Length: 238
Ligand code: FPP
Image (cartoon, rainbow, N blue to C red; front, side, top):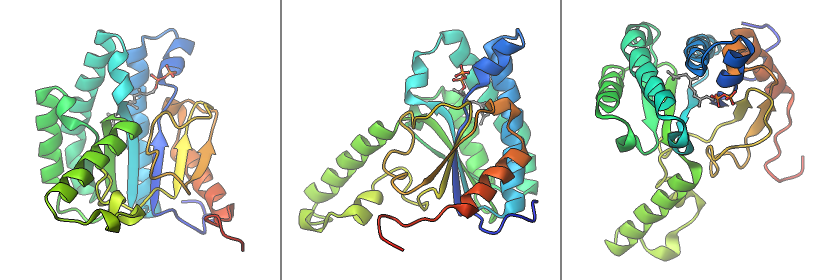
């Protein structure tokens, strides 16, 4: 770990972009890019563990990704299952707790089962919480949150006059986690792509031109180091 790191974010979120471009540059299929991307996930989880980051949220499959070619979707789902099956012993060894957010029931049955198995097996771990965003869309999450809030009002559990930012946050998929402090996006794109729209209001953004499969632990440490130099004012003055 870099000695220059003074402030460690509690929660890091990552848009892992550029797998396809990485593969294309090498004349490989897009699937090979995703496989290399899964290796980068492993390294990143390890780096977060070393830094003692509490939460790491990875944008692994967006609600919009269902529009990709069927072959790519199938390969991504297989890769997810393979990752969970092969990496569960490592997650247990490294004290990592797995969680997931998104419309998880959209996933193929076998992927859902694998996911829930790993979530259950790692539930008692007390180190890093690794949150996979799967079939996740920020706008969908807000819509689901509004529906859940309306239901609670209808049932008389809450009074609509009491609705505020904190209460609404408790109706989102992320209700158990703090907002991200740092959002990293690889491959140089300058957009949020429907990721954690509500939660990133005051998140520090770090965009790197590196493609996700090339993103190393050292790159993660560089992002965290840069985060330590930022002044977070949350709209107030110093
Ligand atoms: C974006 O790259 C990446 C994805 C849509 C999928 C992310 C998946 C992985 C990193 C691998 C699997 C992850 C786990 C947790 C097992 P892109 O395909 O949009 O790249 P491009 O913009 O260069 O085409």
